[in-house]
Length: 228
Image (cartoon, rainbow, N blue to C red; front, top):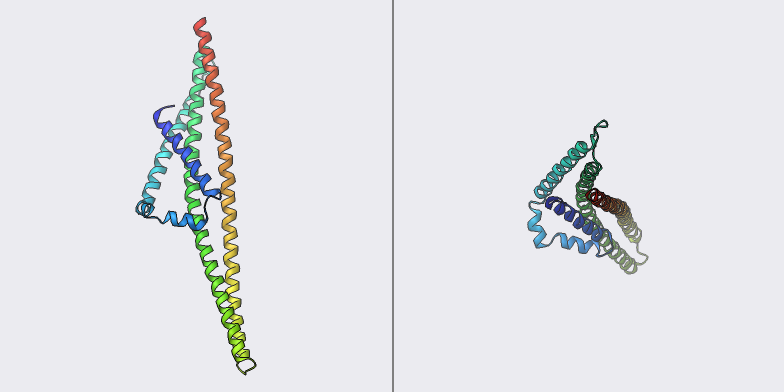
């Protein structure tokens, strides 16, 4: 593997680690939001969009290069007589091109996944904060209504105050229900992204194992040719 593809593979491993950190219950959404809003990330966030699209463009270029290599080594002449060693080397180059295609493709996909996860976690933290604030507001309104009922007792204005307090409590409860449903939706999106990331890890491990087997075959074939 060349230095460039080694760097891309290392970047892919780093992306897998970041995805696992984001999807596993390592920290609460509020903690992640505090980390995202830290001073260091705030400095990077001013040009985060430019960095992201630049990185995405570079990965797309390498993906296109891998596709070109795959098409190049996939075209074989069936009538040509080739030596076994040459044929094995051709197959190994084709497999390398396919491996590079998966590495760059997974790196692009995980970049989008990480960006989406960060957005979902930030939204989830905001919704949690709003839900907590709404609950506190509802509790304070309930406490105020109860104290007002106790003070006025059976006075003529008790019914009017009770209806106003009931309407306010109902509105706050509806808001809490709405925020809770939005929070559950964000959690479902997060679980779906987690399952996609795990399937990508299994596919990459399978490709790595096939590449190791092919390298062993090439080594054995090269040793046999030398003995001949």
